[in-house]
Length: 124
Image 1 (cartoon, helix red, strand yellow):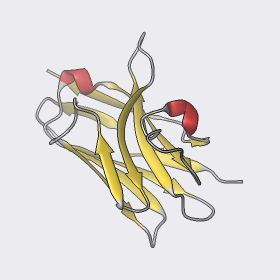
Image 2 (cartoon, helix red, strand yellow):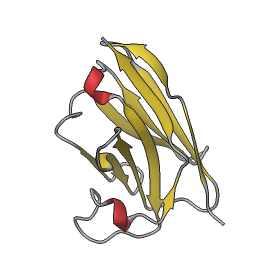
Image 3 (cartoon, helix red, strand yellow):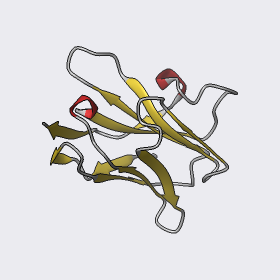
Image 4 (cartoon, helix red, strand yellow):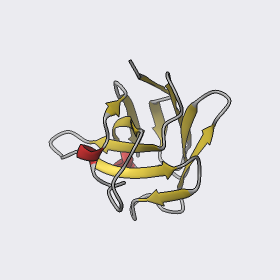
């Protein structure tokens, strides 16, 4: 049974940085992504890493500030978040799949495995 365990969330000031980690069990995932959900909002795509950096994708709202990466030896995916803004406040979820349809990296319903979520709060 594959599972994902997230860590690294917390409270930071605007302009600060956090690094989220998602440790995966089982074999290496082809696709791993990060999503976030703010209160009263739908779960939204943040970033995705396909085939260990073969392709990376970012939501427009985080492009240039966030970086997704993997440590294959640890089977862990990271989300480095810099220049954080209050609007980044949300619960962040790691997601993974052994397969992903073409162009579906932004679709939460196309990922099979999910982490428990970690809270990121950015104060102004």
